[in-house]
Amino acid sequence: MTISEQNDKAMEKITNFMLNAIKTQKRLPWVKPWNCTGVPAMNYVSKRPYSGINAFIFGFMPFENPYFLTFKQIVALGKGMTKENRPSIKKGSKGIPVVFYKKLAYHNKKNISDSPSLIKSLQAKGETVYVSMLMKVYYVFNVQDVENYSFEFPEMIEAAKTMNNTINRNALCENIITEYSAKECSISIIKSDRAFYRLNGDTIVLPTREQFKDTNKFYSTAFHEIAHSTGHKDRLDRDTIRNFDGFGNHNYSKEELVAELSASLLGSKVGIFDTCKDNSAAYIQNWISKLTDKPEMLMEASREAVKAVGFIEKTTTEKEVETV
Image 1 (spheres, rainbow, N blue to C red):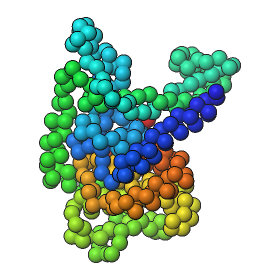
Image 2 (cartoon, rainbow, N blue to C red; image 1 turned 90 degrees about the vertical axis):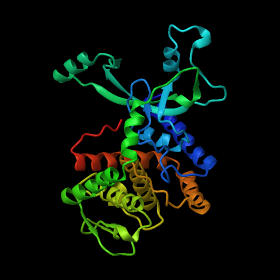
Image 3 (cartoon, rainbow, N blue to C red; image 1 turned 45 degrees about the horizontal axis):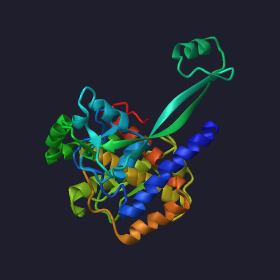
């Protein structure tokens, strides 16, 4: 099987998982983030947050705890313990698929992926080294699925302080809007009956805060429109913005999906959750129909959303954002 075929197979596995989750749970992952702890989904052992498409995979999960482990890590927790005292996976628990990319390098048809010094040496000599990325799927379990072990979550305690501080959360959101407006795209907050991003002129218009049911709705809407603006040719030059094909068509639907996912991801990072999103059966069924017809759109939009949020964060915080 070629690398391309393996990547297609892995992508199909993840896409099917996400689409089945929408159909089963009758809930969209961007309506409300997967947890309200303020801590992103992360590996319990490494404490490294899941990023890229993995951040959205966990958007389908109903777990209240954001920590996950691989089967090998669960086994390692029990090292040195008697069989009776070792941690184990609860009966009936199911692993969640996550993605990682492995960098492959070949020289004269020989796999030299595990020799970084050799790769660097060959490239310095002008030798041709073929590099590709292999997408692989592995499975993790939530800590709630592990029994016979006492976990500690210091990050959640610290995050709760921020989550419970409305002033702090609002300040983070205001900073994103102010900085982005000053550095990238003019944002006008005026009395209006709609929010929109205007490509011609590269401007964002938002209704006043008082026109929204709650502050979170205002910030979520702002993030949605800011996400649209990242597709401008001078920023990420996103195809769905460059080749807008009219309301209801493929590029329009995909761009809306990018903006919805971006707003949800950015909102979860600063601790705001838009609970006013349309979660009606008709709205969900509409998206199920679109994603069933074009299942690849979910993966593609997720990748674009990660890039969009990365761009917004880098612009407003001058911080590099990892998008593995």
